[in-house]
Length: 259
Length: 267
Image 1: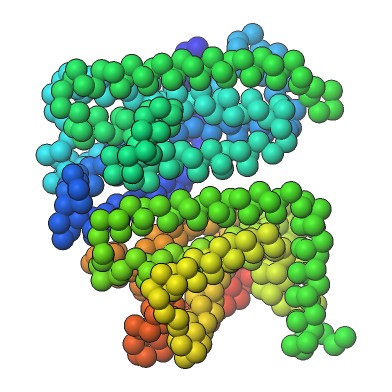
Image 2: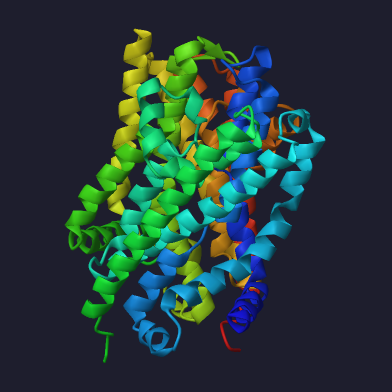
């Protein structure tokens, strides 16, 4: 595993410019932020002041950048080109090698995201962000859970490429649902009640909305945060299992092109 | 058929559109997928506005109806970008990288024209329909209709907006002669374009300046919307038309300079 991580890190460094451009294309939270700061300028919008909005969307930007991955595209491409055979021949589970590549990309993402964290603490949003160790600890756990959950979802979508040729349009539909139900577009507590309830029961919220809400202190204490973190990890476990099942079924069908 | 006349280029454009249509007819399911996507993305874009105007009547001087008109124009412009501008230009960046751009230069027609009409994605017509639908709905909501003069002004400004957008993307392609991997930059610009979905007055200070003069997003959606609503001053309208014409000339000049430094791949 350490060797795989080292190789992954070397790859990340080799393609750093490309990755930084990809990270910069994540502008949606800033686009939303521009609208809501203008709205909250006159008076707070329901429970959200201007500082709350700044903290929320900068938080969303941070969470999104640290949790996103490209494993579905990677799998689809390797199936299409037939290069997946090489990966299957290696004596490690393909999930482990994908995991290593993506974990190795995290340090660069952390570096790129540092200025955003800096801005978060330079503006009035600073007063909104949690500062007690218990909630910060739970936030880190929630982030780890959100990362694993997102990774598992994309593994599952990627495995569908064994069965469908157009699995990448599925990603677009998925992304639309994610934007709506995760709190990426607007905070879940601003949604109509029936939607907020639906978001509670769907996995999307635990990939983005939940960690952001924890970060900006929407839960009064650690006891209120704990169940959210537990649900995040429960969803992560379900998704890892789903990805494993669909992968096993897919590999049985897999006949590499030209083989 | 004489080479070089206006009729010649009109016919070339016709041929290119016909080939694109024939190609896309092979993927008819894509039409359905594209239609569903247009609806989905439009719904997603409107959702924050619905939540916002559920509580407020006006934001930065824009009420729900007029903000919807901007959203409609944004949807139309996104369709133009993804259906008519991006496919060609991405194809060209690939050709420059692989060296097959040489063949484009050998053809007896203007290279910029050929480059800009390489490929169309006709299914993005669904975006245009969705955008027009939003605008119609917005005017029904406001209980009035734009006058003939307003409509004409808006159409002129939409043409200017398309020209500006096209010029921006041509500048990207021109830079590919020097830096090769430029398709990423077009994604980046596409991401910035997302900000054009809000009326320009939502932005403050520096950002408003940047989105009006440097990356003229205001010119692409807000100004045509204001023209349609009858709130755009004649002076701003004329300045935008002049500005977009100037921008188009600049991009043409840069393109001509860039093509001179093209040395083909591997030489």
